[in-house]
Length: 92
Image (cartoon, rainbow, N blue to C red; front, side, top):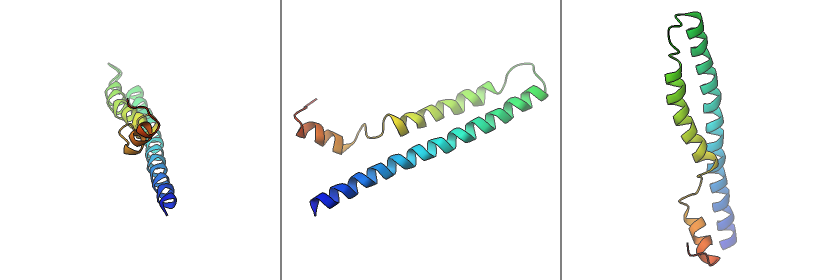
């Protein structure tokens, strides 16, 4: 029974990671499409300064945070990872 619980727990963790990654990909598509539209609006209209840079940078900062959470920091504060490190003898 303990093994089944552990498998379900790992499946739940994988499910959460998959949801974060899918959410990031959806946000990335929106980012590219909306910012491309803003650049087209800028190109057609007044070209005094490249104003789309502000939403590109602002949204890009948030998107990069979402990327790192989905692909690199998933589980950085995971109790399971800390337990495994202690079990394997790695105290730090």
